[in-house]
Image 1: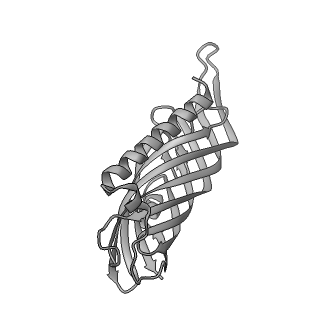
Image 2 (image 1 turned 90 degrees about the vertical axis):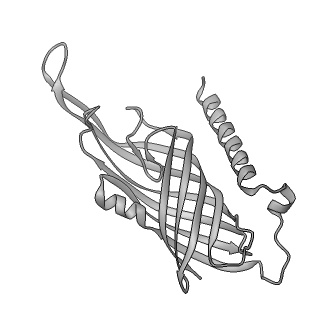
Image 3 (image 1 turned 180 degrees about the vertical axis):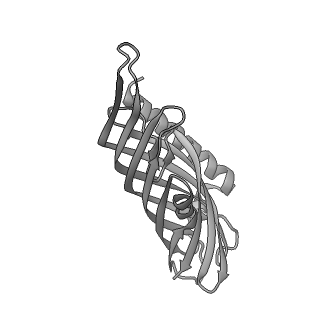
Length: 230
């Protein structure tokens, strides 16, 4: 299978999954789904800024993680265009399986849209589903500890520094947003991430991709957000 065919198949599978998710969660026809409710509430209802506490905690407690903030517009308490910006970092010492150490740090971004699933839209708590398109371009350092060369038996090692890599992926998102007091909210989301296209450099797959997580074609992730409703 060529790289183009592989990318096309990944995109096709992701689009089908998104369509099925929306169909199951909404249980409504397309006209109702994409039509703004008619009432006296204005279309532009403000915006939210948020910070992911889970990623920051992961950064402090493990050898990889990310700092991430988001800006989300509120359109009629129904549609929520969102921009997420983060900075992922990993410092993975010698892997127990491969013996390879890995370092990277780079920004990433996501663009997407959330939809409020609750029947009563104009309240402070929300249940939502949505999607994200994400991208990162990053450099990695990878090296293998010294080992005995199998033929000549001398000590050798290998590695790369500042190897350029990149990745595009899509995320399907389900989450909640609950008011704690005043404009302060807490929320969480669960995400299914599907890689669309990637470039891993000359040594093959990288151990960690900023914003995506541990390397794979797909993975699950989540966020726990502190949110200010403005």
